[in-house]
Length: 561
Image (cartoon, rainbow, N blue to C red):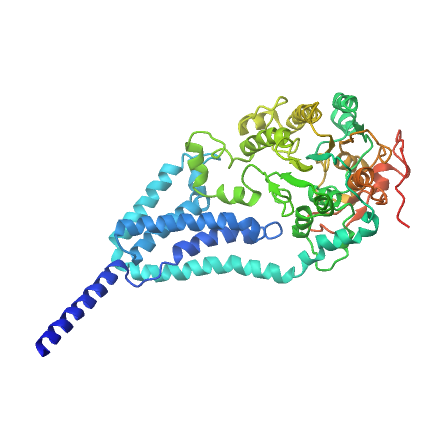
């Protein structure tokens, strides 16, 4: 019995020894953190340089993809080595850094060989360099454990530095996002909404923002363009054209957020937590606002067709977001990686062309417009559709009929001609969309066609906007502003209405609200470093009295008793 027990013990001990040897063969005990830390650091570095615009929600998709790339490269190295060891981690990091830091590593080389924007000419040289480093690292694999430890330390530093910037920003801007609460903001208007009701057949509502589309008067006076044809078309279609309209602010974010929230941005101006050039409080309003909340409370389905711009790319309030392409952060990030030249090498597809700012526009706008034309057929619920169209805003890559120009073609045409050509293309879009939305058999629809701001005039950028000349301010704030109300009850509109009153008039007309009309004011902030320092420039833009030729129709809605 003792001999049998001894043999059994020896067999068990042998199995344990073999298991330990097998585990050692599979893993050498090292910690392969650096491939993933370098991947995360690449994303957080860009975030750290753009904290006034980007939060974790903007960063998260790119972060997850970068970590997935790091994991894929690490597993390929493990497959090559047939074990999880330090040399596999080192080999993975060589390619993680080469792929995700491509522009930083090879930008100078690309300029030296005149590789151009796409960096395609640099790609084979970069791959050869990375391959050579890989071979060298493998031959020196005896130093891999020390290299693995050193790379872990370096990667931690790379990650901690931008995370430190994020922490510092959060500390300095603590409470800034609390300056606006959408639910509380809507509750402030409750006395004016208390008797609101949905009509028996609520109309669909389509709100189009054509970014930087100047007014008919501005285009005629400052651009020598007679654009009256589109105004006549809209009036023939039953629209009310507010020819004396101006934007309430000189930038998209301020203008559209005040439109959505049906109020000026004085609460942000007066809140000490909202500072300097921090755009995120404005983005919060753009993502969740009074107009959208009110319409959703009346049974509307909210669909947003945003642009690449962070302010309208998505809305947390919308039932559906259809941006069709990369966000601003994702586009900036992936354009610095090896993905950019790889996409240029691959055949042109909607995906591969989206990393180019100009071609990204071509891939976005047309599909969005086709979806907008058809979306009313997809649901029985009343629809609220918001579309931010970056035309005639740059890049000026569309022709008058909507063909997409290359970067070289657009540069040759020039920015000034490009802007006017895109006005013509915007007019074509307006005709097509209006004709489709007003087809017999479709549900009645409110259609709002506005600009958020005018084009940027040539001016001395060192002069604060409130001190700009009257002509410069008129160019920057004179906008297209047109309304179609089924039934054509335009008694609540007036010729120089500004967008801050848009939804007040709309809700009073269709839902029986009693929202008072706000005084139409135009505000300018000095620079992008002073986003919340507002100066009233109404008198400079419009003069001491109404604009010549302005006819006020209707009176301000009565405030509740």
